[in-house]
Image 1 (tube, rainbow, N blue to C red):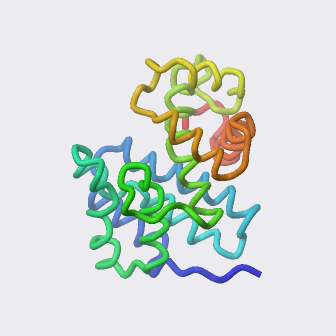
Image 2 (cartoon, rainbow, N blue to C red):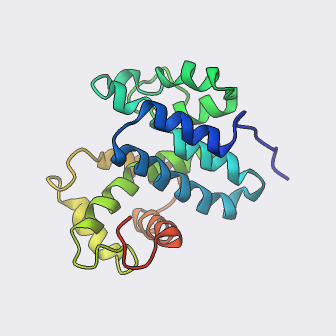
Length: 197
C-alpha cells in the first residue's frame, strides 16, 4: 500500500495560485493538460494519491511565465510561492525534480510519479502543438506514427527538448513508442472529442 501524500492545498487553491502567477491562457492550459495527464497515470500506479499527482502536474511550471529567461532557476522561484500557499516538502520536491535536467543541484526523479512528470511534461506540449495543426484539431485521431514524424522534425516545436523525452522514457524503462502511445492515450482520456487539447 502506498503512502498517502499531501500537497498541503486543495486543487482549487493550487489553481488559484497558478492563475495568480500566470496570465497567458497557454500556460494555464498547459498546467491543466499536465494535471489531467498525471491524474490518468495516477489511477494506474497510485490511485490513493491521484489528487497529489494532479496538483504536481498543475503547478509544475508555476514560475515559468514570470522567469522563463532563467531556465537554471526554474522551480526555485516557485518554491517560496508554494510554501507560502501551504505546500508541502513532497510537493516542492516533486515539482523541482522535473527540472533537474536544467539544474543538477535539484533532486533527480525517484518516485514513479516524478519520472512520469519528467517524461510526459515536454511530450504533452509536442502532442498539443501537433494536434492543433491537424484538420480535426483533435487528439482523438492522433497516432504514434504521426507523433514520431513530429518528434524527428527538430524544427517542429523546436522548444520541446527531445533529449528530456528520451531520458524520461529511459528512467521509466519504457521504449519511446510506449511512452508516446501511453501519453496520447492519457490525453485522449480527458479531451472532448473533436476539440483541440
